Image 1 (cartoon, rainbow, N blue to C red):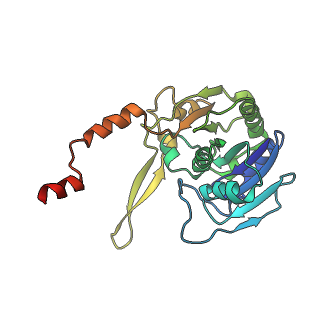
Image 2 (tube, rainbow, N blue to C red):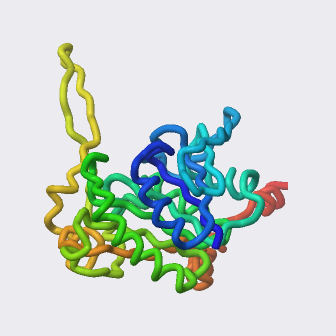
Image 3 (cartoon, rainbow, N blue to C red):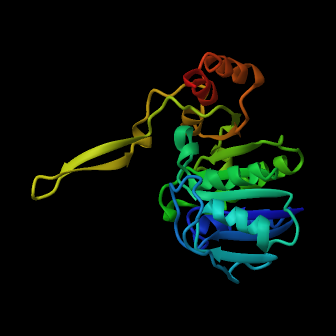
Length: 267
């Protein structure tokens, strides 16, 4: 199995090394990651400057690794279009420092890497750990959890048009409560603006992560289950509008005169 790995913490982040070490048990691993942190860049791509892919040799046993001066979505596009000789069987994006839950799917560079692969029709998984500091990421306790999850995924086919967003509790395997397949809780507002003033009285606003303070999450959602010590697996699907909904919207505009009709009326 050919595996492509990306992340948004940068190619030198410890999370990507942890993930690569596990994935090498399952196939040939290629790495294409940003050359520096690209957190919260969402699904952006680079248009107004050239991209450079620099080969790096910091992953023993990897089939190839490149650092790219771009976003996670850039890395996937460049990997699939240019760097890899053949399309990978699956893409893993991570291991991210800090969970990606709920509305994070719209902000996270980690999730964007998996989403970009999914748009290409490649199976994809984004992975994050509930540890906000790299010093908190304990490889010895994280690796067995990752291994079990990857082994399960390797035995099945993720449906096309969908990717999996997975969050690991920062716990040893024997303390993990299990695996919960749950929806993203889009009702929780995890990031809120904190206001302050500079010495001249000018107001500023800074987004503050209030993940620790979230208390009113839905019981069977990614927020609540991760806090309870579960590995959470959330299928994410970017599907086109269903025919019935598209026809519903189409009816809105049936009574709107076209420019051509208006020109004919005034002629």
